[in-house]
Length: 95
Image 1 (tube, helix red, strand yellow):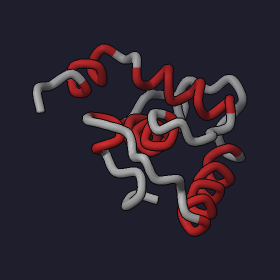
Image 2 (cartoon, helix red, strand yellow):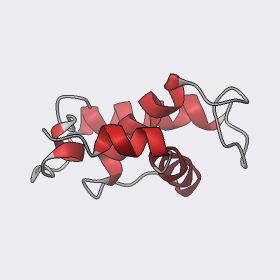
Image 3 (spheres, one colour):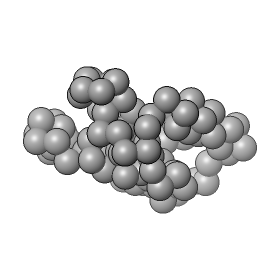
Image 4 (cartoon, helix red, strand yellow):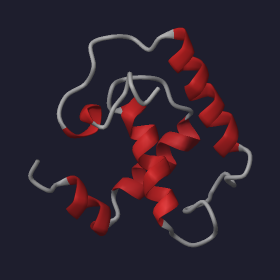
């Protein structure tokens, strides 16, 4: 999935290629792995914010910013993480 949806999708441009079956399976595994331990209304993975929240949001945004499907609950979580002022400073750095 990282090869087909690299950080370039987030910072530069989307990919024109659809996800392969293998990358779709990886995405589903990611969704399954985080949906279970993440409470429906959770703001963060472990009760309070950590860098793991940004890492997960980046992985989800690699899909979302390319138009790939992400479960709504995870999309909302990633959007909340992406709005943190510190994350926005990082996202908006000149590249």
